[in-house]
Amino acid sequence: MRTDLVSEPGDPNRPNEDFAGVGLPASGQGGCVIVLDGVTPPRGGTGCLHSVPWFTARLGGALTELTVSGRDLTLPEVLSRAIGRTAGAHAQTCELSHPRTPQATVALARWSAETVEYLVLSDSALLLQGPDGKVTPVLDDRLARLPRSALATDALVDATLRNKEGGFFTAAADPAVAARAVAGTLPRGAVRALAALTDGATRWTEKFHEGDWAALFDVVAKEGARSLVDRVRDLETADRESRASLGRSKTHDDATVVYVEL
Image (cartoon, rainbow, N blue to C red; front, top):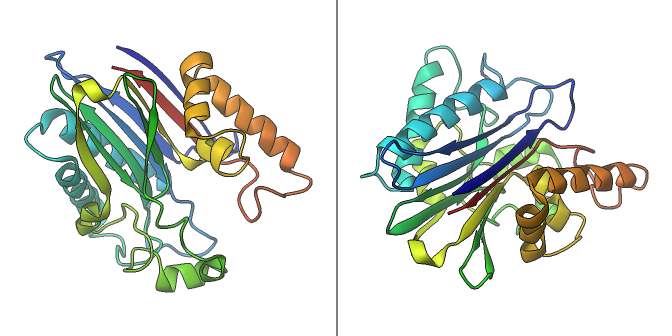
């Protein structure tokens, strides 16, 4: 098995809000990948004493432990328990019902000798390559399918769409959102390699349209995760003047890529 992991903050003067991990059980049978993209809140209160990096570290740590040790749990069950455990760590001090309580998008994969399980919640991405080289994206596209008018302001999104029916879901404080994730299982032989990415890295495909998912996967597999992040940074810098592709988005976002050959 070969792994390649890069996680870079969008601003060197701000903490990286992403989390990435690769777990290899002591038995040597299988492993897992965990990628989280912490959601940067707008200016104003979140009802929480803790930062987004605190939250992603807690949630990522719980997911790593449960994904590796809880082989009897499905990935939605793992995510549900991890959210509950993280919420319990600050329920006594923070207003967890606040729409901007710390939260994250999620991409998980776990494999054994027999199967490959996957889970995606919100706009992180998981790419699965089959033995024939075909790349299949696993995406939760609910946010992307919403009309621009519905996303006009942060206040409107929080009031009508964030973690609400008809909107989109993130891992925040409610374990029930785990059931909303895109999840499934494939035979181990159906997956040769995989890549998990936050949307700061998928900009290469989704915002700048430099290539499709198969082309993005090819860059990571052949040139490395570092090369994809560097390409995104060059595109962001070139786009700074026109803002043609980025629109209201940050010029540079935290970017994380994990690549695994099984």
